[in-house]
Length: 113
Image 1: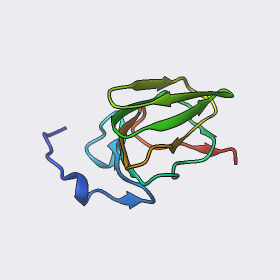
Image 2: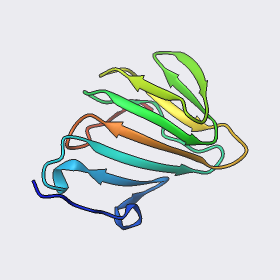
Image 3: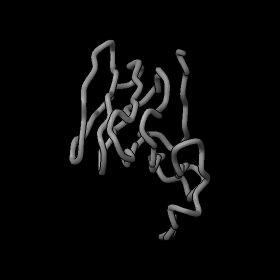
């Protein structure tokens, strides 16, 4: 794989985020979601067959995982194990900016609601 330099704004945009699919960029072993979510928004309950890591850069979110809720803010890192039902919502007054790392070269999501 050769070194690649990409612009986040050139990546496909889906609802509240730009998405980098590793398999589309030389077979990189992860997918990365660059979230920019307005208040009240976020994905519904779902699972993945791999770990997902959330890194909060700005704002506040409520994360639901395995029936528990956690409030996270700037600098917090959440590690969600494989097959764990989870969701998050921007519960702050301003934008939620976070980086979500999917430990897989392609996305695989099972939506539960």
